[in-house]
Amino acid sequence: MPALLHPDEPVPVRLMNTIWADRSSLHDDLATVDDLRAWLAAVDPEHGDTALGEADLTAFRSLRDALRRLAAFVTDDTREKAASPTAEVAEAVAEANHAVEAAPAWPHLEFGDGDLRLSRPGGGSSAARSRSLIASQAIALLTGPGREELRACYGPGCVLYFVKDHPRREWCSAGCGNRARAARHYARHKSEH
Image 1 (tube, rainbow, N blue to C red):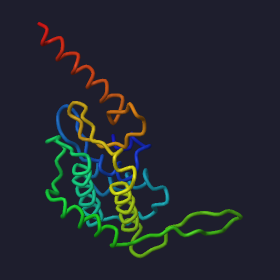
Image 2 (cartoon, rainbow, N blue to C red; image 1 turned 135 degrees about the vertical axis):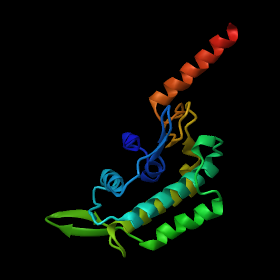
Image 3 (cartoon, rainbow, N blue to C red; image 1 turned 60 degrees about the vertical axis):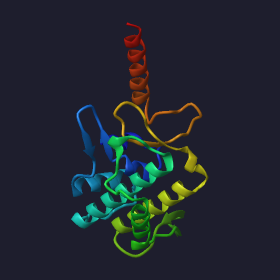
């Protein structure tokens, strides 16, 4: 799961990046309910709901597609390969709001075993609460002061998004940066001959 290789990205970006590309095709890291279960376990250690079903998978994929469309809007993404099945921004906004409202979760402080810990009470299943929380984080990312740091990676063939956390960062990973530099080098030398 390449999306799990970018653990420092915000969880909504990691959800967007469950669609990725290699030289041959696009891939979907949320192809099955088991894929969703593994992804949730990796991004949310508190997620304990093993009773995931096809409806949960469909709901997470819909949220992911909406967030990819909104990220494309915010970043002026022109990559054809990265297009989202959610065509309209208004449709993506409605999906994000639907996800937030489906099972709102809120931070709740608990004291037990001599320590303080965070819990997230709320309605709905653990999966619905996780989806609601991710949608809420995405809304904050897409509308907050860090919005300008969200980027589309223009490495050759890449369809990922990332948050620019360093002034010189222009790609989602060192691999994409290396491929971009190699492509520029090849194009320069090809035009000289």
